Image (cartoon, rainbow, N blue to C red; front, side, top):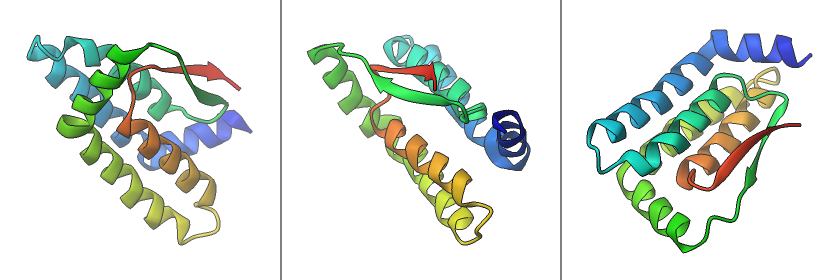
Length: 122
């Protein structure tokens, strides 16, 4: 079932979400100053491409993680969260789209504070 949901997710828009995460990571990597955010963006890009069967957990990274998350929210997090919330609202209208909408809501929350998150198998 996970495979089917992940394939449908990827075909019907997951590739866009994952690509936006990769774009954010590349933009931060190019700036050199943004290198601390790049691994988090790439980690969540993989989760965004194939989210079913995986969960996000918080790692305790201390006060540096908090500072990085605040700066992330200002520069990139809000537009990624907005992207996921718009897609979630559109998918929630249909009954079939509700599981996909729920994944977008989880990704929107992760978009706000991605530093210190880990992706693990469920």
